[in-house]
Length: 285
Ligand code: PMP
Image 1 (tube, helix red, strand yellow):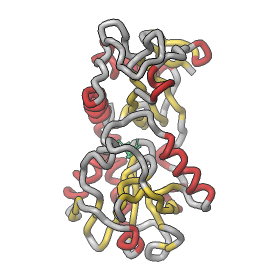
Image 2 (cartoon, helix red, strand yellow; image 1 turned 90 degrees about the vertical axis):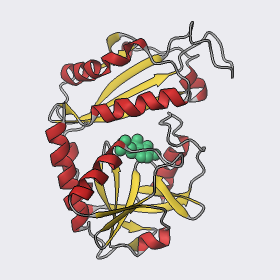
Image 3 (cartoon, helix red, strand yellow; image 1 turned 45 degrees about the horizontal axis):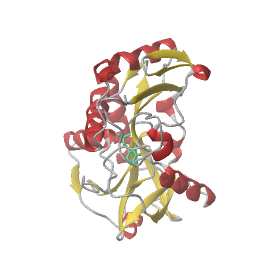
Image 4 (cartoon, helix red, strand yellow; image 1 turned 30 degrees about the vertical axis):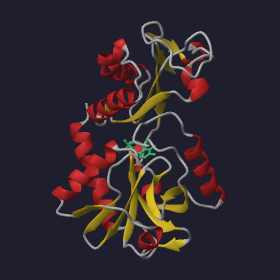
């Protein structure tokens, strides 16, 4: 696979980043994952906007190459022959010559920019979409700025392992009794014709897929309520689902061992997934 590091396209085993890189030592970096369907990027503009916001919130200098990111994404998709898959992008505060809690001078330390592709044939035909996912609930103990897409992913990773150990597929995190989001996705329940999902704040990542799905839901005459909900309310819902750039819209059929409805993916969720995939494919670049 060919990857991109700081201006160079290289074979993956020749790509190098300093051991003093702030992301390696302090998780001082941000990332984006953009999906590729039919060789085209889904919602690149949304990911680029959120990336810029993440950099701003952390005072990481915008790399000189920022304006070329679309071209770099496209080049990697092309050279790696990606039909369906993902492009991972990471920008860090860079690698000063030593370890120090104080931010390095942005005049002398350039951000590190890394991109690579992941080939996922049939990404949109995942069998999980037909079977649905089981989730468990866990306490949300992450930091208070989850709206910034940092590479600080240890707790989400631990959450996924807790889910696996419990025989489930993912975990929904709970803060003060209310669901925040999944370990790598936004969380929703549906009751009747109403979709409920937590409102945007510093408590959750502002999902690019979330924004699109809520827009399409309104167009499909579904009601949307952006408010808190509990695990108890979720267990009684008709349907539940998650969204993310890599899973699109994915049904949830079980929460903490309690099946939703008849335990199979809901019709409204299936419809939302269909609309999302159709519209996203049409708008892909
Ligand atoms: N929440 C969290 C914690 C995530 O890690 C992700 C995916 N990176 C999402 C939500 C979904 O965001 P998006 O739809 O932009 O992929």
